[in-house]
Image (cartoon, rainbow, N blue to C red; front, side):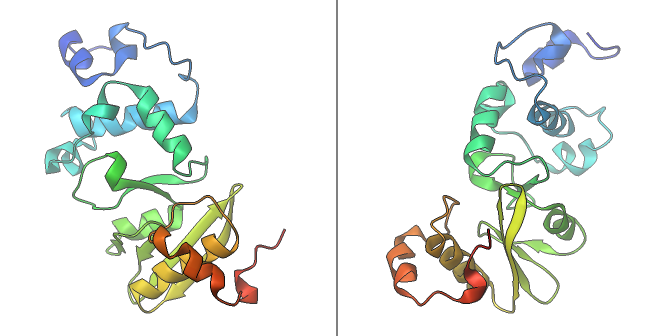
Length: 192
């Protein structure tokens, strides 16, 4: 157990490595495990130097993720995790939860922190005067465009996903067939 951390507080927050418990998920050495612990520390522990910006503002970790790393890990693997991407809360004042998180580039995550804004749509971020739509595949950015209108960014991203038969989450999957019937823009082809 770490110095200055009462055992009952640690167990109640689910950070099992400090209390000596083990969850047997076999992923303690995975980079996501460290991210998971960091998220929980800044949302739960007042002694954490980032608490004032997270837990102190009412940001919390959903119950599903708080006490068990496995659901967090599974969600990450199913929602586009790659080592160079960062987890982002869609609603900056909302919790770390499946419905409020996504993976974004460092550039987009930095924009969210520096007076720019997050968008309510997957893969789209608000910049000062425009919206950025982005898609990452095999550790590379394969689509990144700027748009004046948010819905233009959302639609372009969904069209790119549909026309390239990607498994990425679409904002409007019900439009997939419509997007497939549109002519393919040369700029929308994945260069392999």
